[in-house]
Length: 175
Image (cartoon, rainbow, N blue to C red):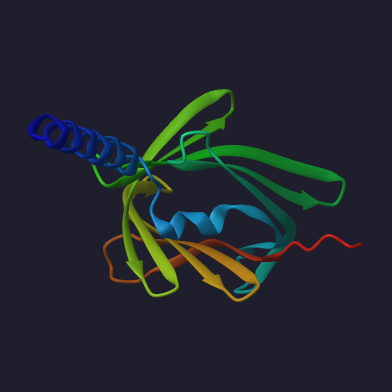
């Protein structure tokens, strides 16, 4: 009787330990909006105060370890299609998002602090723009049928300047 109880307690403790280890690397809920295909536009402010727009597409797939996503991002301008791949991985130990991209054949890694607020998450980090130190804020917002991603910079003057944004709709394949 005592031996059976000890075995059950050991078995339950082992399962709880296994569950907690598996749960540590799980991506937070807000990241799951990255899964799937979205199509729409990529917008960049121009010098005249308007916005230049390009056709855009995001394809997101879960990583095999369930702690992140692989994104393929495409932008089309005329006959040219720019493609980039990024790995977004949740670092549960530091509670930050690690983003790795390949630019000009070089691996670029950044870390972002996440603050979830309603249907949006704000990712924040330090960086530079035009040779100046800035705070970068990436806002990811999931709306019904739509994903919006905005990058803003603040150079310390209190103003958040839009650098670019994606306005993407859920991609629905035709029958």
